[in-house]
Length: 301
Image 1 (cartoon, rainbow, N blue to C red):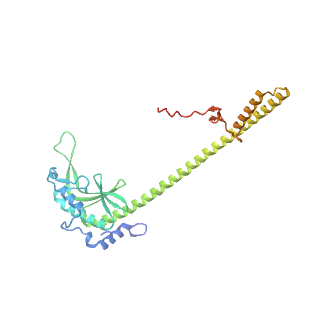
Image 2: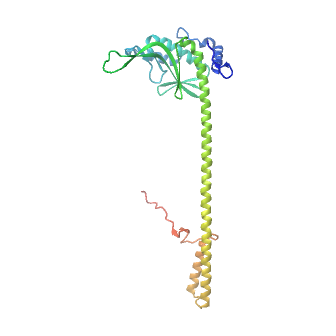
Image 3: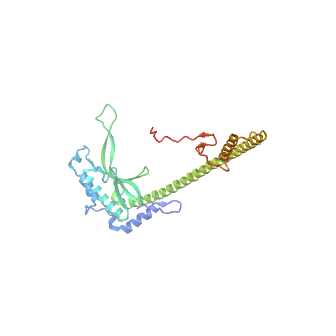
């Protein structure tokens, strides 16, 4: 077996190293048997689907599983190979702590809590349909070449019959998948860290924005209070001067005294430093001197 090497250090690649470890640890369990024995429940389900009589209606003899099951599509003569390969694959993967998940009519191997879509196919060859002379069309003919495919994040990896039959590549396939699962896990961690950092930045920015808005609101209130204080000082000076002139002119009547008392109470209500209560003005906006309208509890529009 050709060893892949780390070009930067001249050492075997992590994938090659893991492949050797798998062969050493799993021993005979990594060998695809000549006969299907004690198959996994998912293999039994796939076998039932592949051997349904109605599955052989297609002209090219290709049959396939459907629904929430292992994804297998081969000719009738390769059903046994497909089932034996997938049964061995599933048993070894489960022994190594991984799970098979079926959902949305797709099959996944779950490694490090990361889902990798898998399927087993017999490759087809595209040939021109010579019977159709109106336009160019193609027929797809099975080639008897089997392949195992894995897809994650839109990247597809394929292993197929070649110098070595697919069964002899099982350790390499598992090593590649486990390394890919680790990479996906690290990508997920990096992505979570990135989005956590983005959320924290947004939280800090929102908090800063709230502080700015509160600072502006407080400053506006300060300006408004200073204006009210200035206005109320003018008002009190006016009342003092009015009272002095009334006394000078002997016009300090009972009615005037009541009016002066009323006016000074309004000044105390308007004064931001005293902020006295006033039964009739408590629901008044001091900035605009307008009555604050309450919502109508009977208005359901």
